[in-house]
Length: 148
Ligand code: RTP
Ligand code: MG
View 1 (cartoon, rainbow, N blue to C red):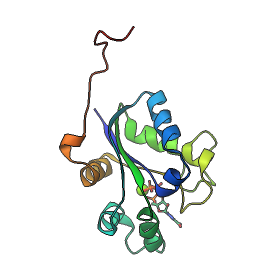
View 2 (view 1 turned 90 degrees about the vertical axis):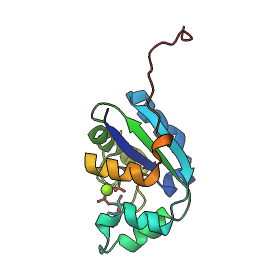
View 3 (view 1 turned 45 degrees about the vertical axis):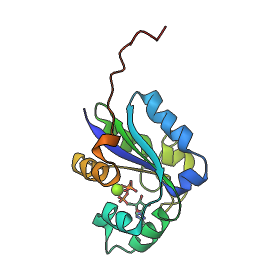
View 4 (view 1 turned 135 degrees about the vertical axis):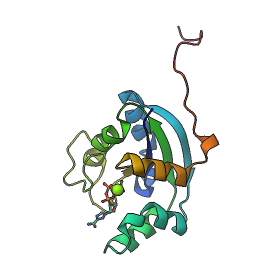
């Protein structure tokens, strides 16, 4: 089953949006496979955002993403990578539609609340950067006898 890496960025954590963001993915119907509150080291930030090295916003991006706790997650489901990107909205919250996470909660491009992998290759790479294999749990949601 397709998996993606989703992260509530430091601004989303500071603004107490973890619960609402998790709820949107749960209500959509995706399955949470892994989650942790953590600090990103500079080394991890530079690996995670390696594709942006050399761009004018790179240093600000690294200092922002390492500035406080993030909430890192793995979610799974059919087409979850593209679907999550739609739920997040455009990179710049000014362009993100109402109803999307960035459209509803964000204002500036540098503080846009949430990260989500942009392709299957990015998802594999990012999940491996943030989680050990044993931390990722897929499970059967079939009735196990205690749902009434
Ligand atoms: P992300 O990787 O954080 O999920 O965001 P994204 O795919 O929508 O956007 P991306 O192009 O990968 O950019 C990574 C993050 O860099 C910041 N950014 N600032 N013009 C700017 O000042 C600018 N452009 C990008 C954003 O915070 C973006 O999320
Ligand atoms: Mg990106």
